[in-house]
Length: 271
Ligand SMILES: Cc1cc2nc3c(=O)[nH]c(=O)nc-3n(C[C@H](O)[C@H](O)[C@H](O)COP(=O)(O)OP(=O)(O)OC[C@H]3O[C@@H](n4cnc5c(N)ncnc54)[C@H](O)[C@@H]3O)c2cc1C
Image (cartoon, rainbow, N blue to C red; front, side, top):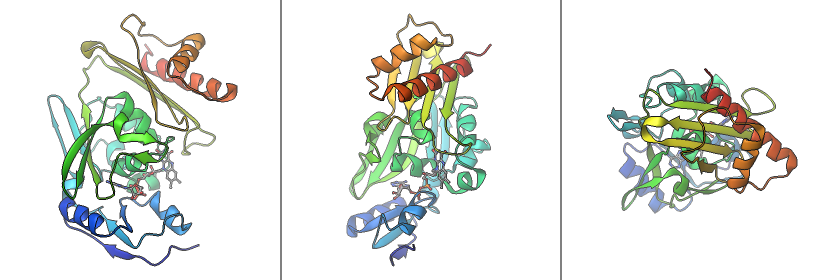
């Protein structure tokens, strides 16, 4: 199938894009097109207007300071993989980016597009939930900042209003002693995950989080108590964590998610 006929606009600024979104109820934002392209071809979306944000300079901007890094919404997975943007995790972001799809998809797909689409199986959703990420949003009438777990409301559902764009993500800086693990279970390399486990541990800022992703909903985030040892989880511990997260899958799915968590912890705490 081919898309329905649509108008196409390439605004020069975020403000102009937000005004276009507000003015045309049938408008849709186009970033890397890696998800939207197939959706249009299948006619699952039939927009009157596509607003191409890929070349808006503000959205490609990156920056860092002592507390963290800001990564513009249209920064591609490949740019992160290649270390072309600041990485306040000391290399963890690049490792996660490398596992997303194939290089061709990573060259076009954007971090903002991935979060705005909010597919529970998307790698950034789980990874960035573990890091305490904030999301910057601009609409026709102003800007706001949300914690990622407030931004994502459910499966492919976010807090974005019709006239709003996700403009950037803000990731806090971790200390050199921080440990991270990310493991996704998928049938073929480069595919979306059936289960994702993430562990983020930073003794200097008392952060210790475990995340179960690809769970048919928002990523499940568990703040581990100070007393939990920074070492690979046992099977029983991983299963107990899923219970604490109120994970509701069947026995097979629970086993997959427990394995993903356990392997993420092994990667985080490998000697
Ligand atoms: C074959 C294949 C395999 C893939 N495998 C994986 C995988 O293993 N892991 C993974 O995480 N992802 C995977 N993806 C998805 C890929 O990572 C895309 O980058 C991502 O889904 C969307 O990013 P995009 O920039 O292409 O967004 P688009 O396709 O352009 O847009 C996606 C949606 O988000 C909206 N949108 C985009 N940007 C913004 C914004 N800034 N503000 C508001 N709304 C916005 C669009 O309107 C649209 O609804 C795969 C994709 C393909 C085609």
